[in-house]
Length: 150
Image (cartoon, rainbow, N blue to C red; front, side, top):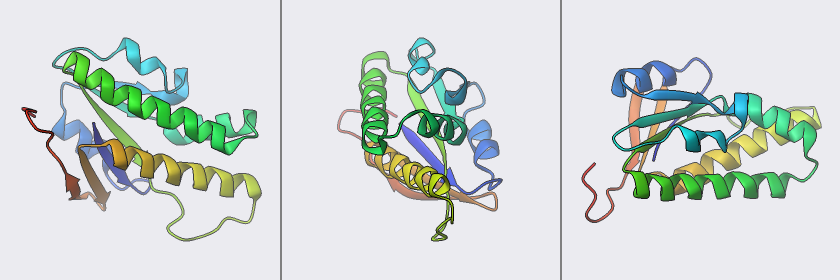
């Protein structure tokens, strides 16, 4: 799994599109974070995007932030396992929100917090983490598992 993170309009989508020109794109806000399973196959890069809209909707429906974070953590673990089983690759595009600014409204704080937890959990699972700002890309971490050819 690879993670591309950065602020709004930072160039994440363009960077991913250039690096993975044949990728299949899937918006988690359209069918939820579980729907990717139907799209991952061997030798295919699957890009998952649309996290903020899905998170905002999920927060409105779920009063328990810890349970929602657990659900996301389970999906991230499932993605890693599916990559190992299929040989496909998943690329996450996750927004960086807040940059230290605390929103006034409680629901905005919850969204920012959950987006931050998603980013932390995704970074913990990712083999490579890329930070994109102003169209510039910096590798924050790249780990190649033993015996892995990517």
